[in-house]
Amino acid sequence: MSGGSEPRPEFAALAEWLRDTPDSELSRRQQAAEAAFRQLGITFAVYGEDEAAERIIPFDIVPRIFSAREWRNLTEGLTQRVEAINAFLQDVYGERRILNEGVIPPELVLRNPQFLPAVAGARPPHGIFAHICGIDLVRTGPDEFYVLEDNARTPSGVSYMLENREAMIRLCPELFEIFEVAPVDSYPDMLHETLRSVAPRGRGNDPVCVLLTPGHFNSAFYEHSFLADQLGIELVEAADLEVQDDVVYMRTITGPVRVDVIYRRIDDDFIDPLVFRPDSLLGVPGLIAAYLAGNVTLVNAPGTGVADDKAIYSYMPEIVRFYSGGEAKLPNVETYRCREPQALKYVLDHLPELVVKLVDGSGGYGMLVGPTATREQIENFRRALIAEPHRYIAQPTLALSTVPTLTASGVAPRHVDFRPFVLSGANGVKTVPGGLTRVALREGSLVVNSSQGGGTKDSLILLDSPAPGQSQGQSQSQGQSQSQSQSQSQTQGVR
Image (cartoon, rainbow, N blue to C red):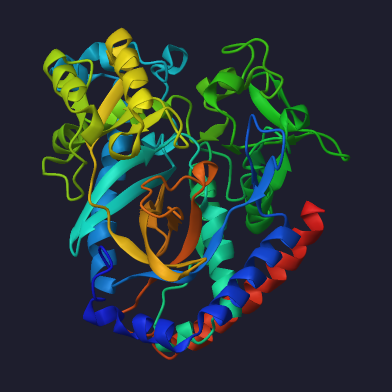
């Protein structure tokens, strides 16, 4: 839906469900979901706040729906984009053809804080740097999707996709009888297969994979614990690992165990104090040496952050064209690079109309939304832009699509974005048929980040038809039984 308009014909059944279900019943179900999330410990941390540092991400009981045709088109575009991101990373850490041919200004990459000279020349197994990508999409019309942001460092949020689906199956089972919905509970198996497929060559058919977390004080620790449990791999911290002769071992009660693949949820700066920040207590000394020796695979590879820098994002159409030979199937939002004098002049003249972002910003911080900003905020950004224009990009304020959302005053339209998760392994690129829909719960707001008051909702990908010999209801019921069992295990692990 867009701007509160009538639903498209294929989604009329959802509108009928909303009409037939009283707001009080929707509220009851939503409260039940949030109570379950609280019991399971599905929280995120808000840094810098003394009160309520651990929060439940608000959940909206009204799902978002994508047709099978829409999903096919999105999957094609996502595959093309992620393949280009990996080709770009392999190139800039190798031959640098895209820089030498002048497609991207070399200083934009080589002087980028996310570019890591320490790993230049490294070639991870199968040439894959960004094994897990979260691509943020926004919709502006019935068949108009734009990429808002690429997340290629340590993309988060997939645990909410899985838990949201479990809550919907349990609390709104009738929706899965109304719609034929693609299940998402295959994601842990897909991720585990991806991790195993990129193990260093010669490590056999049963490589040891672990998930490296900064610890329980990290804002995404719930997700780290959840994913390790779902994948059936060990959740480790730096103290659990050691490097000997450029080989990584995990300390266990039965002795050291060699580790082949590390799904790391620690930023580059902190993963190895011998190479990056010497004061880091979160990293493993010698880890980069083991990586460069080809004895361990790091997922995602060090240095992938240069691909999701917002200044680099502005060149993604050229990057896709350079490596694929074709035009991007998923276009960028029009972007002004404030480092360029003409673009800076335009941005300064139109600040009240634009969205301005730090090139390395995330979480909705360091951002100006011109149409909703105060005069003081606009002037503060004006001074910051003049002082350090290279740190910012600007984009027009899009007429983002809205979807029905349960509010205190009933069901009303709210702006959303969408983050599907794309996996790249030795067997190619795969996209789980779902994703994380983030919703701006405040009326008129365009900021969907949980740290800025946003919430989440389930994303239903419709199927053309049920799998042969099995109805979608059977599939969803099996998924529900499996996910309930996993949740019971996860509850014990969290506590």
